[in-house]
Image (spheres, rainbow, N blue to C red):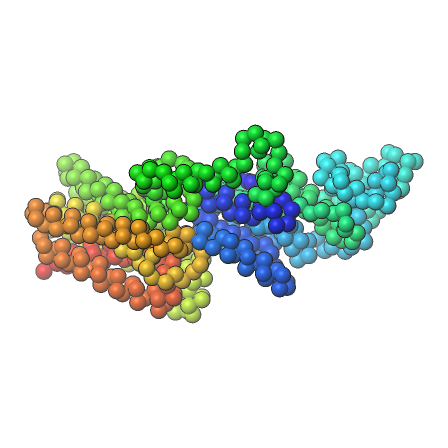
Length: 527
């Protein structure tokens, strides 16, 4: 899906693009930055944009041109929303940095591209008003149109060889940008492109006019496939008749947000529950637009996802027992159910963290490794060792324990997620972007208390299982000690190695704490 948002400088188009990206509700949000900082003004603009999107969950990718390379950095492109900021910078960078367009660079400083040629009735003046007109678009056909040679200087200008060259080179350049952007949009779930509309009436420099011409033409050709959306301030200042009849979309979104904030707490809780399951599992949920408040409160129901997974583990074990399925098959099913339901979401964080930890590099390099989508050898080795150890422990538990012990999966998976959520909220953040920062950047007291209650509930559930005879109190104490020890080790590790928590380390904690609890439970039964 490709969306194009255009507007003059400082019109609010960037803010609107960010809102659209966040409201799409996808797990992975990326900000594809194409601007090259050349001066203090550019640096200030970058700071402004970073502050504007802080806490919204964007992972930033800096790729001034050849944006296809950015696909190598994006995790799960088909589940990602990418905001390209902006098309104008991309055009300029491709023009000046891509060696493929060296000929065009030489021509634009002295020759006007076809749709900026002098108009027949006003020789010497650029046809700025018609720059966006399809009839005046950058094509070699315009340059080759010599049927009207007796009429004006336009025909003579079109017959000029250099002019034909620049029009053909410009057409090739525009096609390159358009195809690049469209290919990128086909590779991701959603690509939101921001472009700037420039006012050319007071510009006389030929090179600048040609650059604007190229930006306009790329935007126009992309616009043939998508609906343009003006920036927020454009909506308020230049709103069309449809806006006036049906109300500004931003106003409606604001009203919806206020309704959610002041509406029934039960409906809001159901919404946050659905968001949590949508983010942390593959269980189908209703589709709706998510805002920052939804993201921040989704952690409140993170342990509920674990409870559902634990229940699935228990029920599948009961079913397999009734079907007299061998214990070996039960072991593999028990291990696979959480992976299938979560889509391996937490294992991904575990593998990235293993790669970073085993690199023995500086802290900054480790954080870069966490963002790298490629799998390293240490990640594969770490995962293989983890799965073998947990499989062995599960096999022993299933063989030596009673069937009711599989009920342990419910409080254990609740506890691991409550602990991960609390550490994400209470410990320092290693990065100022990403999904974790969007959820935990603002420390909502209600979310912290909710996670603490979930932690308490998981302990109470285990105590109830002990009272009813499903397991010994020794097993319960072992599990509680296991989680406490894992938390202490994890806290010291992330602060020392990364300077704080990230989304990957949060997944690492979920994975390691569950594995440690399973292994220590097996050891308790052994002795």
